[in-house]
Length: 534
Image: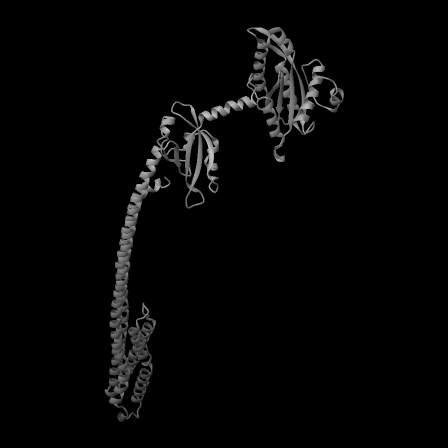
Protein backbone atom coordinates (compact mmCIF):
# COMPACT_ATOMS: atom_id res chain seq x y z
CA UNK A 1 0.00 0.00 0.00
CA UNK A 2 3.00 2.26 0.45
CA UNK A 3 3.41 2.31 -3.32
CA UNK A 4 -0.11 3.43 -4.29
CA UNK A 5 0.93 6.96 -5.38
CA UNK A 6 3.80 5.51 -7.45
CA UNK A 7 1.43 2.99 -9.06
CA UNK A 8 -0.94 5.73 -10.11
CA UNK A 9 1.81 7.91 -11.59
CA UNK A 10 3.80 5.18 -13.41
CA UNK A 11 2.05 5.70 -16.75
CA UNK A 12 2.60 9.44 -16.51
CA UNK A 13 6.25 8.77 -15.68
CA UNK A 14 6.64 6.51 -18.73
CA UNK A 15 5.13 9.17 -21.00
CA UNK A 16 7.39 11.81 -19.48
CA UNK A 17 10.44 9.58 -19.90
CA UNK A 18 9.52 8.83 -23.51
CA UNK A 19 9.14 12.56 -24.21
CA UNK A 20 12.53 13.24 -22.62
CA UNK A 21 14.06 10.43 -24.68
CA UNK A 22 12.67 11.82 -27.94
CA UNK A 23 13.93 15.24 -26.91
CA UNK A 24 17.41 13.86 -26.22
CA UNK A 25 17.51 12.11 -29.60
CA UNK A 26 16.35 15.31 -31.30
CA UNK A 27 18.97 17.34 -29.46
CA UNK A 28 21.65 14.81 -30.44
CA UNK A 29 20.70 14.92 -34.14
CA UNK A 30 20.52 18.72 -34.06
CA UNK A 31 23.93 18.82 -32.35
CA UNK A 32 25.33 16.54 -35.02
CA UNK A 33 24.02 18.76 -37.82
CA UNK A 34 25.27 21.85 -36.00
CA UNK A 35 28.72 20.27 -35.59
CA UNK A 36 28.82 19.43 -39.30
CA UNK A 37 27.85 22.97 -40.28
CA UNK A 38 30.38 24.47 -37.82
CA UNK A 39 33.22 22.31 -39.15
CA UNK A 40 32.33 23.20 -42.74
CA UNK A 41 32.34 26.90 -41.88
CA UNK A 42 35.61 26.56 -39.99
CA UNK A 43 37.22 24.72 -42.91
CA UNK A 44 35.96 27.29 -45.41
CA UNK A 45 37.13 30.16 -43.20
CA UNK A 46 40.59 28.67 -42.76
CA UNK A 47 40.78 27.92 -46.49
CA UNK A 48 39.83 31.51 -47.41
CA UNK A 49 42.30 32.98 -44.89
CA UNK A 50 45.13 30.93 -46.37
CA UNK A 51 44.29 31.95 -49.97
CA UNK A 52 44.18 35.61 -48.97
CA UNK A 53 47.86 35.25 -48.04
CA UNK A 54 48.47 33.57 -51.39
CA UNK A 55 47.01 36.63 -53.09
CA UNK A 56 49.30 38.90 -51.05
CA UNK A 57 52.36 36.90 -52.19
CA UNK A 58 51.17 36.96 -55.81
CA UNK A 59 50.74 40.75 -55.68
CA UNK A 60 54.17 41.09 -54.07
CA UNK A 61 55.60 39.10 -57.00
CA UNK A 62 53.91 41.52 -59.43
CA UNK A 63 55.39 44.46 -57.51
CA UNK A 64 58.87 42.94 -57.88
CA UNK A 65 58.31 42.54 -61.60
CA UNK A 66 57.26 46.18 -61.89
CA UNK A 67 60.32 47.29 -59.91
CA UNK A 68 62.52 45.23 -62.32
CA UNK A 69 60.94 46.96 -65.36
CA UNK A 70 61.56 50.38 -63.80
CA UNK A 71 65.20 49.46 -63.09
CA UNK A 72 65.92 48.23 -66.64
CA UNK A 73 64.23 51.26 -68.22
CA UNK A 74 66.10 53.70 -65.97
CA UNK A 75 69.46 52.19 -66.92
CA UNK A 76 69.13 51.31 -70.61
CA UNK A 77 66.87 53.97 -72.08
CA UNK A 78 67.99 57.36 -73.31
CA UNK A 79 65.84 59.48 -71.06
CA UNK A 80 66.27 62.77 -69.32
CA UNK A 81 67.02 63.15 -65.64
CA UNK A 82 63.46 63.91 -64.69
CA UNK A 83 62.15 60.68 -66.24
CA UNK A 84 64.99 58.71 -64.66
CA UNK A 85 64.14 60.19 -61.27
CA UNK A 86 60.52 59.13 -61.78
CA UNK A 87 61.59 55.54 -62.63
CA UNK A 88 63.86 55.48 -59.57
CA UNK A 89 60.87 56.47 -57.43
CA UNK A 90 58.73 53.73 -59.04
CA UNK A 91 61.49 51.23 -58.26
CA UNK A 92 61.46 52.20 -54.58
CA UNK A 93 57.68 52.31 -54.28
CA UNK A 94 57.19 48.89 -55.91
CA UNK A 95 59.82 47.35 -53.66
CA UNK A 96 58.29 49.00 -50.58
CA UNK A 97 54.84 47.72 -51.53
CA UNK A 98 56.20 44.23 -52.15
CA UNK A 99 57.96 44.35 -48.77
CA UNK A 100 54.74 45.42 -47.03
CA UNK A 101 52.68 42.66 -48.63
CA UNK A 102 55.29 40.03 -47.83
CA UNK A 103 55.41 41.25 -44.22
CA UNK A 104 51.62 41.08 -43.94
CA UNK A 105 51.55 37.59 -45.47
CA UNK A 106 54.32 36.43 -43.13
CA UNK A 107 52.49 37.85 -40.11
CA UNK A 108 49.22 36.16 -41.13
CA UNK A 109 50.95 32.82 -41.77
CA UNK A 110 52.70 32.96 -38.39
CA UNK A 111 49.32 33.60 -36.71
CA UNK A 112 47.69 30.54 -38.27
CA UNK A 113 47.03 27.65 -35.85
CA UNK A 114 45.40 24.35 -36.63
CA UNK A 115 41.97 24.08 -34.93
CA UNK A 116 42.55 20.42 -34.00
CA UNK A 117 45.59 18.71 -32.54
CA UNK A 118 47.09 15.78 -34.40
CA UNK A 119 47.00 17.37 -37.90
CA UNK A 120 50.68 16.59 -38.42
CA UNK A 121 50.93 16.82 -42.23
CA UNK A 122 49.36 20.26 -42.36
CA UNK A 123 51.51 21.39 -39.43
CA UNK A 124 54.63 20.28 -41.32
CA UNK A 125 53.59 22.21 -44.45
CA UNK A 126 52.81 25.27 -42.33
CA UNK A 127 56.27 25.12 -40.73
CA UNK A 128 57.94 24.91 -44.19
CA UNK A 129 55.87 27.87 -45.36
CA UNK A 130 56.97 29.98 -42.38
CA UNK A 131 60.62 29.09 -42.99
CA UNK A 132 60.40 30.01 -46.70
CA UNK A 133 58.89 33.41 -45.95
CA UNK A 134 61.56 34.11 -43.33
CA UNK A 135 64.31 33.34 -45.91
CA UNK A 136 62.97 35.90 -48.43
CA UNK A 137 64.30 38.90 -46.48
CA UNK A 138 67.99 38.37 -47.37
CA UNK A 139 67.68 38.08 -51.19
CA UNK A 140 65.08 40.82 -51.21
CA UNK A 141 67.42 43.25 -49.41
CA UNK A 142 70.25 42.37 -51.82
CA UNK A 143 67.95 43.05 -54.77
CA UNK A 144 66.99 46.49 -53.46
CA UNK A 145 70.55 47.51 -52.61
CA UNK A 146 71.87 46.41 -56.04
CA UNK A 147 69.12 48.30 -57.91
CA UNK A 148 69.77 51.49 -55.92
CA UNK A 149 73.53 51.30 -56.66
CA UNK A 150 72.94 50.80 -60.37
CA UNK A 151 70.54 53.77 -60.60
CA UNK A 152 72.90 56.04 -58.63
CA UNK A 153 75.86 55.06 -60.92
CA UNK A 154 73.78 55.66 -64.06
CA UNK A 155 73.26 59.34 -63.30
CA UNK A 156 77.01 59.92 -62.84
CA UNK A 157 79.09 61.33 -65.73
CA UNK A 158 81.68 58.54 -65.65
CA UNK A 159 79.00 55.81 -66.12
CA UNK A 160 80.36 52.69 -67.82
CA UNK A 161 77.62 50.72 -69.60
CA UNK A 162 79.66 47.57 -69.28
CA UNK A 163 79.25 47.67 -65.51
CA UNK A 164 75.53 46.75 -65.88
CA UNK A 165 74.80 43.05 -66.52
CA UNK A 166 71.10 42.28 -67.19
CA UNK A 167 71.69 38.58 -66.60
CA UNK A 168 73.19 39.20 -63.19
CA UNK A 169 70.33 41.54 -62.26
CA UNK A 170 67.74 39.00 -63.38
CA UNK A 171 69.53 36.34 -61.34
CA UNK A 172 69.20 38.49 -58.23
CA UNK A 173 65.50 38.99 -58.96
CA UNK A 174 64.96 35.25 -59.40
CA UNK A 175 66.55 34.63 -56.01
CA UNK A 176 63.68 36.67 -54.55
CA UNK A 177 60.90 35.34 -56.75
CA UNK A 178 61.79 31.63 -56.40
CA UNK A 179 60.91 31.54 -52.65
CA UNK A 180 57.70 33.39 -53.46
CA UNK A 181 56.78 30.74 -56.02
CA UNK A 182 57.66 28.06 -53.48
CA UNK A 183 55.53 29.83 -50.86
CA UNK A 184 52.57 29.97 -53.22
CA UNK A 185 52.89 26.23 -53.88
CA UNK A 186 53.16 25.48 -50.15
CA UNK A 187 50.08 27.61 -49.44
CA UNK A 188 48.14 25.67 -52.02
CA UNK A 189 49.35 22.32 -50.61
CA UNK A 190 48.59 23.44 -47.04
CA UNK A 191 45.03 24.52 -47.93
CA UNK A 192 44.31 21.20 -49.64
CA UNK A 193 45.85 19.23 -46.77
CA UNK A 194 43.80 21.12 -44.14
CA UNK A 195 40.63 20.50 -46.13
CA UNK A 196 41.41 16.78 -46.36
CA UNK A 197 42.25 16.53 -42.65
CA UNK A 198 39.04 18.37 -41.77
CA UNK A 199 37.09 15.79 -43.78
CA UNK A 200 38.88 12.94 -42.00
CA UNK A 201 38.32 14.51 -38.56
CA UNK A 202 34.68 15.14 -39.34
CA UNK A 203 34.19 11.55 -40.48
CA UNK A 204 35.73 10.27 -37.22
CA UNK A 205 33.60 12.57 -35.09
CA UNK A 206 30.46 11.62 -36.99
CA UNK A 207 31.21 7.93 -36.53
CA UNK A 208 31.79 8.40 -32.79
CA UNK A 209 28.69 10.55 -32.40
CA UNK A 210 26.58 8.06 -34.35
CA UNK A 211 27.80 5.27 -32.07
CA UNK A 212 26.89 7.35 -29.02
CA UNK A 213 23.45 8.09 -30.46
CA UNK A 214 22.91 4.41 -31.19
CA UNK A 215 23.89 3.47 -27.61
CA UNK A 216 21.58 6.20 -26.26
CA UNK A 217 18.65 4.76 -28.21
CA UNK A 218 19.46 1.28 -26.85
CA UNK A 219 19.56 2.60 -23.27
CA UNK A 220 16.24 4.41 -23.77
CA UNK A 221 14.61 1.26 -25.12
CA UNK A 222 15.98 -0.77 -22.20
CA UNK A 223 14.74 1.72 -19.60
CA UNK A 224 11.31 1.90 -21.21
CA UNK A 225 11.05 -1.89 -21.06
CA UNK A 226 12.10 -1.84 -17.40
CA UNK A 227 9.49 0.83 -16.61
CA UNK A 228 6.75 -1.16 -18.30
CA UNK A 229 7.79 -4.29 -16.38
CA UNK A 230 7.84 -2.30 -13.15
CA UNK A 231 4.38 -0.92 -13.89
CA UNK A 232 2.98 -4.41 -14.39
CA UNK A 233 4.54 -5.59 -11.11
CA UNK A 234 3.18 -2.57 -9.25
CA UNK A 235 -0.29 -3.12 -10.70
CA UNK A 236 -0.23 -6.72 -9.45
CA UNK A 237 0.96 -5.49 -6.05
CA UNK A 238 -1.79 -2.87 -6.00
CA UNK A 239 -4.44 -5.49 -6.72
CA UNK A 240 -3.12 -7.65 -3.88
CA UNK A 241 -3.03 -4.76 -1.39
CA UNK A 242 -6.46 -3.58 -2.46
CA UNK A 243 -7.86 -7.08 -1.91
CA UNK A 244 -6.35 -7.16 1.60
CA UNK A 245 -7.62 -3.66 2.44
CA UNK A 246 -11.16 -4.40 1.27
CA UNK A 247 -11.53 -7.72 3.12
CA UNK A 248 -9.90 -7.00 6.49
CA UNK A 249 -11.97 -5.73 9.43
CA UNK A 250 -9.45 -3.13 10.68
CA UNK A 251 -9.68 0.47 9.47
CA UNK A 252 -6.73 1.63 7.34
CA UNK A 253 -5.90 5.17 6.28
CA UNK A 254 -2.81 6.22 4.32
CA UNK A 255 -1.82 9.91 4.28
CA UNK A 256 0.94 12.07 2.87
CA UNK A 257 3.21 14.14 5.18
CA UNK A 258 0.69 17.01 5.12
CA UNK A 259 -2.17 14.85 6.37
CA UNK A 260 -4.01 14.51 3.04
CA UNK A 261 -5.72 11.14 2.68
CA UNK A 262 -4.23 8.93 -0.04
CA UNK A 263 -6.26 5.80 0.74
CA UNK A 264 -9.07 4.79 3.13
CA UNK A 265 -10.21 1.16 3.44
CA UNK A 266 -13.86 0.33 2.64
CA UNK A 267 -14.27 -1.05 6.20
CA UNK A 268 -14.88 2.55 7.38
CA UNK A 269 -18.29 2.47 5.70
CA UNK A 270 -19.68 -0.14 8.10
CA UNK A 271 -18.50 1.80 11.16
CA UNK A 272 -18.95 5.45 10.16
CA UNK A 273 -21.52 5.18 7.38
CA UNK A 274 -19.04 6.63 4.84
CA UNK A 275 -15.47 6.27 3.56
CA UNK A 276 -13.15 9.29 4.18
CA UNK A 277 -12.61 11.13 0.91
CA UNK A 278 -9.36 10.76 -0.92
CA UNK A 279 -7.41 14.03 -1.04
CA UNK A 280 -9.24 15.51 1.98
CA UNK A 281 -7.33 16.45 5.17
CA UNK A 282 -7.56 13.80 7.88
CA UNK A 283 -8.22 16.63 10.37
CA UNK A 284 -11.68 16.99 8.80
CA UNK A 285 -12.67 13.66 10.33
CA UNK A 286 -10.80 13.42 13.65
CA UNK A 287 -11.20 15.33 16.89
CA UNK A 288 -8.08 14.62 18.93
CA UNK A 289 -5.39 17.32 18.93
CA UNK A 290 -2.63 14.78 19.65
CA UNK A 291 -2.80 13.53 16.07
CA UNK A 292 -1.62 16.89 14.66
CA UNK A 293 0.97 16.55 11.93
CA UNK A 294 3.69 18.31 13.88
CA UNK A 295 3.46 15.51 16.45
CA UNK A 296 3.19 12.82 13.81
CA UNK A 297 6.42 14.02 12.23
CA UNK A 298 8.14 13.76 15.60
CA UNK A 299 7.81 9.96 15.48
CA UNK A 300 9.84 9.57 12.28
CA UNK A 301 12.84 8.13 14.12
CA UNK A 302 10.70 6.40 16.78
CA UNK A 303 8.90 3.02 16.63
CA UNK A 304 5.21 3.01 15.66
CA UNK A 305 3.01 4.62 18.33
CA UNK A 306 -0.50 3.93 19.55
CA UNK A 307 -2.94 6.83 19.72
CA UNK A 308 -6.58 7.06 20.71
CA UNK A 309 -8.71 9.31 18.54
CA UNK A 310 -12.31 9.90 17.61
CA UNK A 311 -13.94 10.08 14.19
CA UNK A 312 -17.43 11.48 13.56
CA UNK A 313 -19.98 9.07 12.12
CA UNK A 314 -22.55 9.95 9.50
CA UNK A 315 -25.18 10.31 12.30
CA UNK A 316 -22.96 12.89 14.05
CA UNK A 317 -21.76 10.95 17.11
CA UNK A 318 -18.07 10.31 17.82
CA UNK A 319 -16.59 6.82 17.48
CA UNK A 320 -13.49 5.97 19.54
CA UNK A 321 -10.60 4.28 17.69
CA UNK A 322 -7.32 2.86 18.93
CA UNK A 323 -4.89 3.75 16.15
CA UNK A 324 -1.38 2.56 15.40
CA UNK A 325 0.46 5.36 13.56
CA UNK A 326 3.38 4.10 11.46
CA UNK A 327 5.66 6.49 9.52
CA UNK A 328 6.64 5.13 6.12
CA UNK A 329 10.03 6.64 5.50
CA UNK A 330 10.92 8.30 2.23
CA UNK A 331 14.27 9.48 0.92
CA UNK A 332 14.30 12.77 2.87
CA UNK A 333 14.38 13.67 6.54
CA UNK A 334 10.62 13.21 6.92
CA UNK A 335 8.44 10.20 6.07
CA UNK A 336 6.90 9.97 2.67
CA UNK A 337 3.60 8.75 4.15
CA UNK A 338 1.79 7.83 7.38
CA UNK A 339 -0.24 4.65 7.81
CA UNK A 340 -3.01 4.59 10.43
CA UNK A 341 -4.39 1.15 11.34
CA UNK A 342 -7.36 1.41 13.76
CA UNK A 343 -9.88 -0.71 15.66
CA UNK A 344 -13.03 0.46 17.44
CA UNK A 345 -12.84 0.90 21.25
CA UNK A 346 -16.01 2.97 21.87
CA UNK A 347 -17.46 0.59 24.46
CA UNK A 348 -14.13 0.29 26.26
CA UNK A 349 -13.76 4.09 26.40
CA UNK A 350 -17.29 4.47 27.76
CA UNK A 351 -16.54 1.88 30.45
CA UNK A 352 -13.24 3.60 31.33
CA UNK A 353 -15.05 6.94 31.51
CA UNK A 354 -17.61 5.51 33.94
CA UNK A 355 -14.85 4.05 36.11
CA UNK A 356 -13.02 7.39 36.04
CA UNK A 357 -16.13 9.25 37.16
CA UNK A 358 -16.78 6.75 39.94
CA UNK A 359 -13.18 7.07 41.15
CA UNK A 360 -12.68 10.82 40.91
CA UNK A 361 -16.13 12.50 40.94
CA UNK A 362 -18.72 12.76 43.69
CA UNK A 363 -21.76 10.62 42.81
CA UNK A 364 -24.24 13.11 44.32
CA UNK A 365 -22.98 16.50 43.10
CA UNK A 366 -20.90 15.36 40.05
CA UNK A 367 -18.02 17.66 41.04
CA UNK A 368 -14.48 16.28 41.74
CA UNK A 369 -14.18 14.28 44.97
CA UNK A 370 -11.50 13.86 47.68
CA UNK A 371 -9.36 11.47 45.57
CA UNK A 372 -9.41 13.95 42.71
CA UNK A 373 -8.51 16.72 45.17
CA UNK A 374 -5.35 14.87 46.32
CA UNK A 375 -4.28 14.15 42.74
CA UNK A 376 -4.90 17.78 41.76
CA UNK A 377 -2.87 19.11 44.70
CA UNK A 378 0.01 16.70 44.10
CA UNK A 379 0.22 17.80 40.48
CA UNK A 380 0.42 21.48 41.48
CA UNK A 381 2.97 20.91 44.29
CA UNK A 382 5.23 18.72 42.11
CA UNK A 383 5.43 21.17 39.23
CA UNK A 384 8.99 22.08 38.05
CA UNK A 385 10.46 25.06 39.86
CA UNK A 386 10.09 27.39 36.90
CA UNK A 387 6.36 26.58 36.56
CA UNK A 388 5.35 26.63 40.23
CA UNK A 389 2.53 28.99 41.27
CA UNK A 390 1.21 30.42 44.51
CA UNK A 391 -1.50 28.08 45.84
CA UNK A 392 -4.30 28.87 48.25
CA UNK A 393 -6.32 26.03 49.82
CA UNK A 394 -9.73 27.10 51.13
CA UNK A 395 -11.84 24.70 53.23
CA UNK A 396 -15.56 25.63 53.28
CA UNK A 397 -18.05 24.29 55.78
CA UNK A 398 -21.76 25.01 55.41
CA UNK A 399 -23.23 26.61 58.55
CA UNK A 400 -26.56 25.16 59.81
CA UNK A 401 -26.56 22.26 57.33
CA UNK A 402 -27.48 19.81 60.11
CA UNK A 403 -30.54 21.98 60.83
CA UNK A 404 -31.59 21.62 57.17
CA UNK A 405 -31.38 17.82 57.32
CA UNK A 406 -33.26 17.70 60.62
CA UNK A 407 -36.12 19.98 59.53
CA UNK A 408 -36.61 19.24 55.80
CA UNK A 409 -35.02 15.80 55.52
CA UNK A 410 -31.99 14.32 53.82
CA UNK A 411 -33.47 14.57 50.31
CA UNK A 412 -33.72 18.34 50.73
CA UNK A 413 -30.13 18.35 52.00
CA UNK A 414 -29.00 16.44 48.92
CA UNK A 415 -30.86 18.90 46.66
CA UNK A 416 -29.18 21.82 48.43
CA UNK A 417 -25.72 20.25 48.03
CA UNK A 418 -26.34 19.78 44.28
CA UNK A 419 -27.43 23.42 43.84
CA UNK A 420 -24.53 24.67 45.93
CA UNK A 421 -21.97 22.56 44.03
CA UNK A 422 -23.04 23.90 40.63
CA UNK A 423 -22.85 27.53 41.76
CA UNK A 424 -19.57 26.93 43.58
CA UNK A 425 -18.01 25.56 40.38
CA UNK A 426 -19.15 28.64 38.43
CA UNK A 427 -17.84 31.01 41.12
CA UNK A 428 -14.25 29.66 41.09
CA UNK A 429 -14.14 28.99 37.36
CA UNK A 430 -10.99 30.54 35.91
CA UNK A 431 -9.36 30.89 39.33
CA UNK A 432 -9.12 27.29 40.48
CA UNK A 433 -11.13 24.12 41.14
CA UNK A 434 -13.82 23.14 43.68
CA UNK A 435 -14.05 19.68 45.33
CA UNK A 436 -16.52 17.98 47.69
CA UNK A 437 -14.36 16.22 50.28
CA UNK A 438 -17.14 15.00 52.60
CA UNK A 439 -20.66 15.77 53.88
CA UNK A 440 -21.19 19.54 53.68
CA UNK A 441 -17.45 20.26 53.52
CA UNK A 442 -15.89 21.58 50.33
CA UNK A 443 -12.33 22.42 49.28
CA UNK A 444 -11.41 25.11 46.78
CA UNK A 445 -7.88 25.12 45.33
CA UNK A 446 -6.96 28.58 44.02
CA UNK A 447 -3.78 28.93 41.93
CA UNK A 448 -4.56 31.62 39.40
CA UNK A 449 -4.34 34.74 41.55
CA UNK A 450 -1.56 37.30 41.27
CA UNK A 451 -1.96 39.32 44.47
CA UNK A 452 -3.41 39.12 48.02
CA UNK A 453 -6.12 41.55 46.96
CA UNK A 454 -7.22 39.21 44.18
CA UNK A 455 -7.36 36.32 46.68
CA UNK A 456 -9.47 38.42 49.10
CA UNK A 457 -11.87 39.24 46.27
CA UNK A 458 -12.35 35.54 45.44
CA UNK A 459 -12.95 34.66 49.12
CA UNK A 460 -15.50 37.50 49.37
CA UNK A 461 -17.38 36.04 46.37
CA UNK A 462 -17.42 32.63 48.08
CA UNK A 463 -18.86 34.10 51.30
CA UNK A 464 -21.46 35.98 49.26
CA UNK A 465 -22.41 32.75 47.43
CA UNK A 466 -23.21 30.96 50.73
CA UNK A 467 -24.80 33.92 52.51
CA UNK A 468 -28.24 33.84 50.87
CA UNK A 469 -31.57 32.04 50.93
CA UNK A 470 -31.97 28.85 48.87
CA UNK A 471 -35.28 27.64 47.43
CA UNK A 472 -35.43 23.88 47.85
CA UNK A 473 -37.88 21.08 48.50
CA UNK A 474 -40.54 22.54 46.15
CA UNK A 475 -40.52 26.08 47.52
CA UNK A 476 -39.08 25.74 51.00
CA UNK A 477 -36.58 28.43 51.90
CA UNK A 478 -33.27 27.81 53.63
CA UNK A 479 -30.72 30.49 54.61
CA UNK A 480 -27.14 29.51 55.20
CA UNK A 481 -23.62 30.88 55.37
CA UNK A 482 -20.09 29.45 55.27
CA UNK A 483 -17.08 29.16 57.53
CA UNK A 484 -13.89 29.37 55.44
CA UNK A 485 -10.30 28.59 56.44
CA UNK A 486 -7.41 29.35 54.09
CA UNK A 487 -3.81 28.11 54.00
CA UNK A 488 -1.08 29.13 51.51
CA UNK A 489 1.56 27.07 49.79
CA UNK A 490 4.43 27.04 50.57
CA UNK A 491 4.11 29.50 53.49
CA UNK A 492 1.87 27.26 55.63
CA UNK A 493 3.06 23.82 54.55
CA UNK A 494 4.89 21.89 51.85
CA UNK A 495 2.57 18.82 51.81
CA UNK A 496 -1.16 18.24 51.37
CA UNK A 497 -1.65 17.14 54.98
CA UNK A 498 0.13 20.21 56.35
CA UNK A 499 -1.97 22.51 54.19
CA UNK A 500 -5.21 20.70 55.14
CA UNK A 501 -4.37 20.97 58.85
CA UNK A 502 -3.61 24.71 58.57
CA UNK A 503 -6.80 25.40 56.57
CA UNK A 504 -8.86 23.27 59.00
CA UNK A 505 -7.63 25.29 62.01
CA UNK A 506 -8.40 28.56 60.23
CA UNK A 507 -11.89 27.27 59.35
CA UNK A 508 -12.49 26.30 63.01
CA UNK A 509 -11.69 29.87 63.97
CA UNK A 510 -14.33 31.12 61.51
CA UNK A 511 -16.93 28.74 63.02
CA UNK A 512 -15.96 29.82 66.51
CA UNK A 513 -16.66 33.42 65.51
CA UNK A 514 -20.21 32.55 64.45
CA UNK A 515 -19.58 31.62 60.77
CA UNK A 516 -19.95 33.69 57.59
CA UNK A 517 -16.26 34.51 57.83
CA UNK A 518 -12.99 33.63 56.06
CA UNK A 519 -9.78 33.39 58.07
CA UNK A 520 -6.20 32.94 56.86
CA UNK A 521 -4.06 30.55 58.87
CA UNK A 522 -1.39 32.06 61.15
CA UNK A 523 0.73 30.94 64.10
CA UNK A 524 -1.76 32.63 66.44
CA UNK A 525 -4.53 30.40 65.07
CA UNK A 526 -2.29 27.37 65.62
CA UNK A 527 -1.67 28.28 69.26
CA UNK A 528 -5.31 29.11 69.93
CA UNK A 529 -7.16 26.17 68.31
CA UNK A 530 -4.73 23.31 67.67
CA UNK A 531 -5.69 21.48 70.89
CA UNK A 532 -9.42 22.24 70.85
CA UNK A 533 -11.90 19.70 69.51
CA UNK A 534 -13.78 20.77 66.40
